[in-house]
View 1 (cartoon, rainbow, N blue to C red):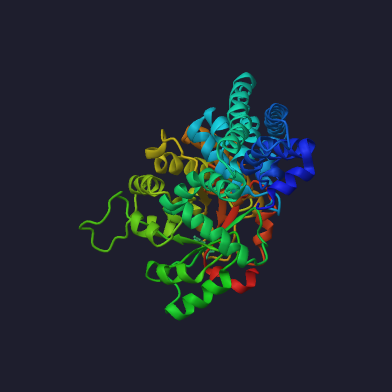
View 2: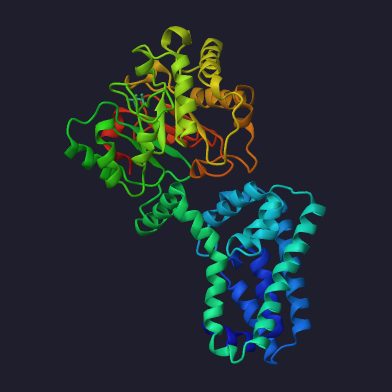
Length: 474
Ligand code: 13P
C-alpha cells in the first residue's frame, strides 16, 4: 500500500486500466487496492507523472467495462457461483455481503458499491445473477463509474495541487481513504451481533479445519435427553465438532457445548412458543435466550413432543417465533405406521396426505410471511415407525417423500419456493437465497447415512440414537 507511488509509476496507464477493470468485474479482483490506487494516480498526475485527463478517461472506461463484464458473467453463470467452494481468491462471504447490500439498496447498490472494497467486485456480478434490467444497470454503472473513477483521481489531483508538499502526507491520506471506504462495513460489523458472530465463526473455522465429510449436506445430531453428565456431553461435542454438523444437546448443556464447538453449529431441541423476552412461564426457554447462547437451529414439532400433547397450533407458533428471532426451525413431520397403511418400501397416498396435512397446519402462521435473506426453514421427514426402531425408511421412499414435500412448498408458503439464487444447498443454510431444506430422520446411523445423502434432493439427515457415538460418523 505504501508502495503505491512506485507501483503506479511502474505499471503505467495500462496497469491502472487492468487493475481497475479486474477490481470492477472479475471476482478474483476483490483484493486489489482500488480507491487508494486511483487517488494516488490522481496525485501523481498533479506532480506531472501522468496526464490527468487521460487518466480519468481511462479509469472511467475501465470501471464501466469492468462492471459490465461482471454483469455479463453473473448473467451467464447465474446461481452456479453460489455453489463455488471458498478459495484464496474467491470468498463466498464477500458475495453474500454484496447480496445483502444489493437487497437493501436495490439498483443504487451499483453506485454505492463502487466505494466499498470487496463489495465493489461482487455487486455487478450479482446484478447479472439477479438479471437486473440491463438499461437500469448500465445507467447506475455509468453514474457510479463516473463518481468513483473520475471523482477520486480528481480529488487526488486537486489536493496534489493545493496542498504544498503533499507527498509528505500522501500515506496518511491514502490510509484515510481506505478507512473511510471500509468504515461502513466496520460499522455494520460492530453494530450487528449476527455479523460479528459470523465473522468470528469464519475465522475460527479457518483455524480449525477438519475434514468436511458431509460437504453440501446438513447432519443434525439430536441427543434427545442424553447424556447424563456434562462431562460426557463435552466429550460427545468434541467428537461431533465438524463442518456441516448441528449438535442439539439438552437445554442444560447448551451453554457449555456452545463454548466447546468451533466448527459445528448449535441447535436446541425445542423452544417456547411465544415470542417474548422473559415472563411468568415456569420451565420454558425463550427463543431469545437461545439466540443469546449462540443457538442457530431449533428442532420443532418432534414426534416425541407431539406424543406428549404438543398441537399443530402450538408448533405453528413455535415456527413463527423461531423465524422472528433469526433461528432456523427444523420442523419434524411424519406419519405413524397406522397412518402409513403400507410397508416401508413403498410410499402410500395416506402417508403423503398425512404429511401434507401436518405441514399445512404447522406452517399456517408463516404462510404469508416473507423470508428475510437470513431465514431458512428446514423440514425433517421422520416417519414415526422408523424412529428408534433400527428399521429405517428405505432411502428411495424417503427420497420420494422429500420430493413431495419440496413440491408442496410453494402452496404452503409462497416465499419458501422463492429461491432467487439457485438451488438451496446445506452450506448456504441460513444464508442468502436459501429457503427450504428437507432432511430425513429415523434410524439413521453411520452405516446407512450415505444411502440417504447420495441423493441430491435429500439435503441432510436428523440423527437420534446413533449421534450419541459420534466418532463413528467421521
Ligand atoms: P433415531 O435416529 O434414534 O431413530 O431418532 C431419530 C430422531 O428422532 C431424530 O430426531
